[in-house]
Image (cartoon, rainbow, N blue to C red):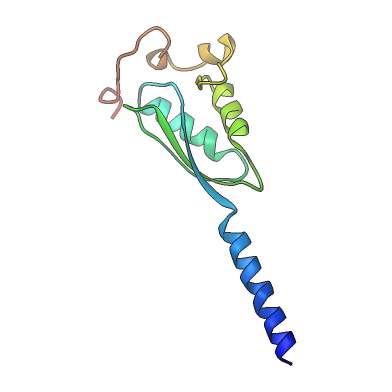
Length: 119
């Protein structure tokens, strides 16, 4: 009986440890400049299966994420960013995707921070 209880207890502990390691925090730089960019970036990130949390900071251009590593990885999220017209350090949006962002969101031509403009 002791062996059964001990085995069950060890299995529960290993399942608990595995479940705790599935979530990972990460940050990445994503180019953009305003509230409209923020909404687009966060929506694109949350649209990737396995992304549980996404928050993009306008001044620092840092996208903070919590992801389930079993379902996604950083490259899938970066691919989603460039698909909606936002560059990352490793990947650049196509001209077509970049041209689809709103004119005020054109971060390549202008490095100003328009975060006050769309609130």
